[in-house]
Length: 95
Image (tube, rainbow, N blue to C red):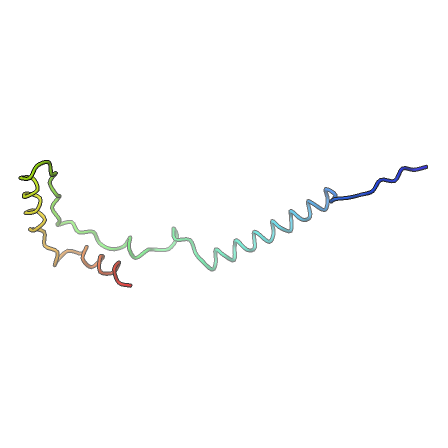
């Protein structure tokens, strides 16, 4: 008499087929997502293309109260009306 064994679970072939189907669905979903939302590394960002002001003086290091007065004077002498940073700041603050 032959022994009959109750089969339960999945066979290895069924598991491989399931993995292939899940992989294909993942690939199709990923490519559709990439087309819908392109990567920011490939697109030009407006913030990275704004010009940087070159006419700004460096701020001196503050270690005492007299250095604080010097730093304040240096910052007061910086002309913000001609600086391109002000334009970049305005564009970043506009909602």
